Image 1 (cartoon, helix red, strand yellow):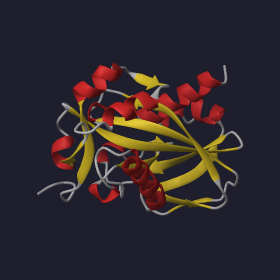
Image 2 (cartoon, helix red, strand yellow):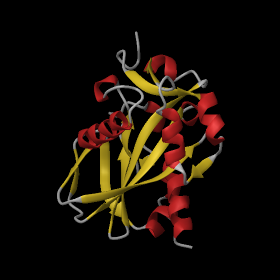
Image 3 (cartoon, rainbow, N blue to C red):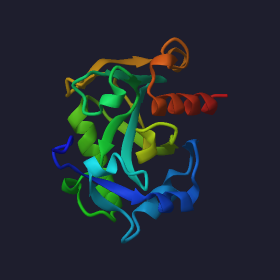
Image 4 (spheres, rainbow, N blue to C red):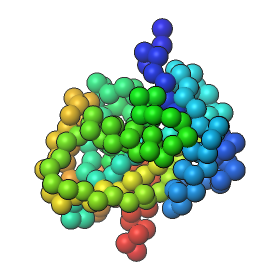
Length: 204
């Protein structure tokens, strides 16, 4: 029986990702990757149970970071979350997989609809938000990272009123970059640590 109840997720062949530029860590040209992935015939939906163990494909993950007056939203993943390999780790990323419910495989609109759906499922917030396409993150040094690629969006909130919509999100709170790079750094999951490093570099 599938661990993911037959969920279908958007994937791209690893070779397409490598043609744009393989890397470890962060790249600040996310538009180049999205354009390559969303060309006709490139991306496709794949059974998640298969995708999780096949490094020939990269699952595309929308990874939204929320910031208010310089402080960054973070949370801990509880055992109620779907990805057991990340339980009890802290994360900055709100978002997740793109699914067939979001639309066709070769459309930027599909990707954006998927990102917005994932955000609405995980958190709710008041006020308004502006966002920018910030980076791409990759880490092939562990089982989770080897089959995923994160597209990072940075949201600027005009209000700090944010609440979780899922029980899998605990300790939801804003933290300074200094806190995340200091006493909390050891708790961060790999992608979040990569993002903290990149955000710190922006301020050097």
